[in-house]
Length: 432
Image 1 (cartoon, helix red, strand yellow):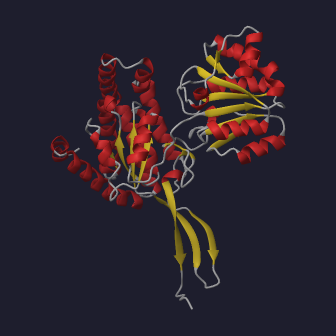
Image 2 (cartoon, one colour):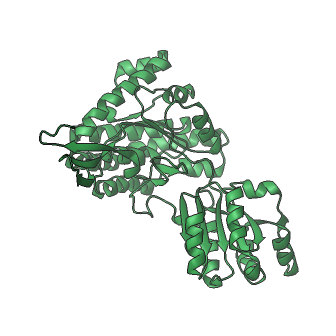
């Protein structure tokens, strides 16, 4: 970052953020002109620069981790913050993976010739400038830069203050790669101040920023959603359900439910509620809850589920109404017995967050009803909710997950960072 901008950051935060916005808007024009090869060369150069600067990134990260530890941050927070050598190499590999993806920019679809003679199509184009606000995970700096660059967008990245030194170190490597590839370093800018007021400025830069993507806890996303004057791509909760139908293959259901809950606890696509059809509850619940007990997962059960577990001596606690509206992000699961498919879908509609929900069934009619009627960003049949992820969906990476219904829904990859415009090609036609 130029010295004068550094000075501005220290003396006038509003002016600093406006200048960052102006820089991003100017850089977005250069990116919109960039060819696929130019963008891919930049991604490869950044990947090389990150590997070359691995020791500097690790040193910066160690200082951030030491500071967070001294402040009493919990183990999960420290885990999200920490970058080891493998994670840094993974960032570089992620950049190279994005470079291999097809470039969506400039793609034309729906080509038709109208009776007037004009030739009509739709062209995919960048959004322009993307502001991304995130917490703890410094690898997001590289992931977001990669996706925005490949989709032709400039980006303004505001990571958490706890990772400021790490994000600065990564940004220096990103700028080195951009410069080597002949693209403006201001195409990727990391907000270089810890002051939280910077977020308030960023989400109101209507003239320069086209969309905001918040990644973090519910309180952050609620604040951004309430205060932003710019469109926001977001999800608030990941209250994901798995429903075990009375036709389910119980061996399959056991594998899927176990994976959906225990493969990783702290992610937004982890199952938080298990719904079991009454017809298989006595057969299935003891099987899956013995697995949960062995893994020290606390089970919060409705009256019917608790009675079944009490009868076979498996410890559980009585669920409160609030439990079924809670994203635990922890080894805790809510369990309810339901009459069948209609009751399961009604429960999901009442308590879900429109993120990811799954049914385990061998009945294709029930499967299709679930797919059509459950109003979530990802709806699954006979698969773990943990697959609701940009990498698993073949997007290379994701900028986030959206539960909104306009523009982008579900994992947001390259296509979600673009829009479409109408293209008309004529040869002298005039309207009569």
